[in-house]
Length: 305
Image 1 (cartoon, helix red, strand yellow):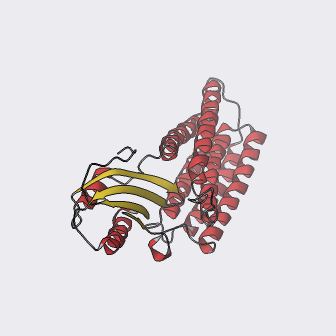
Image 2 (cartoon, rainbow, N blue to C red):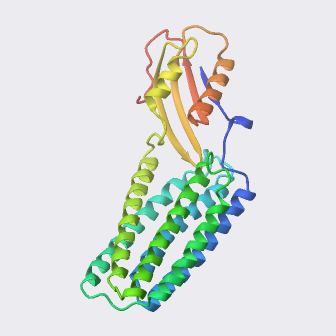
């Protein structure tokens, strides 16, 4: 006996429909991309690694914002006979390329920063202060755009925290520019670049780990498989749970399949509806597929669990 919870209606939590959320992500992505191009251009013009490294960090967040924007759009694409889950899983693959790119670029910048530490070139401190100050304004302004509801919307929360971190790094670049302007400390430029490069690399390695795990169908962060199993096993009439699998579908979708041994019960439809609602409310699992077995014999299913 099989049951699938959440095929239609309010029981499914998809990405938001095109509207204010999509427009917000579009605006902050384009604004931050424009600033990243501006900062990189000035970094090359004045030969400042501090500006270039900050631009690299902003580029990484622009890619992340673009993926959040894309998730809000792609999640609306309908499923097909070939892509029965739809297209949301593409958002699990793009972070892999993003992370690999950022690790490589941050490593190259860190190497150049170490090379310059011995004989740092003169860099105009005022240019760095002005450009980085624009970055503070851009990051704080766009962070305020996604602040509303960020406490319960993980998509918005991630964007908000990244933008606030960008503002802090831009502030550090302003301080470095002030030190160069006031005391002529040219070494502050490569030192700041090295610091930002480390921050970018650490974040990119974490992104690489998380995106790789998601692409390999790992259980999403924040969900404890043992806790889910115990919760299901504790439902009325359930004798045991096996073949439990939980994985991310991308764009807010979390899928789960499980076999339940339930020897007695003539209320399977109501039971599966209730347990599906509970799994969504408690664990965020919004694609639960349950197979109920009466336990009359051994399971001969060819599956792992």
